[in-house]
Length: 92
Image (cartoon, rainbow, N blue to C red; front, side):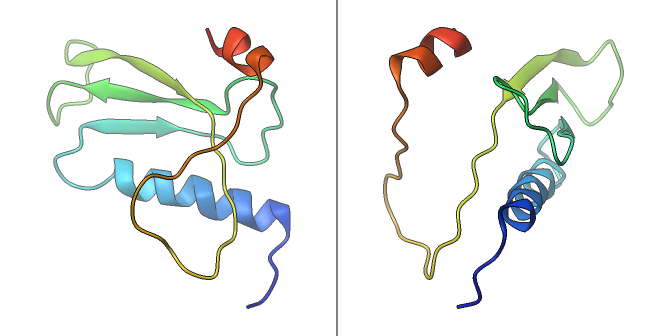
């Protein structure tokens, strides 16, 4: 396996989220800048009640934090990441 640099891993992680949000029937509009090194959130996803991306159909925005990693093989089941209490307080 070729070792990817962190910048490329981040771009691939963001692209995977954008691809999923853009699937038909998902009524989502991602706003995730690449290269963002913010402390809390990397961007947000706007959620709509239907396929019309209008202010009338906007349900709200969900702030997101993107985490990407390189693996040899995808696994099934629960995947978890460890966070410190400071992270939870910050996101709260």
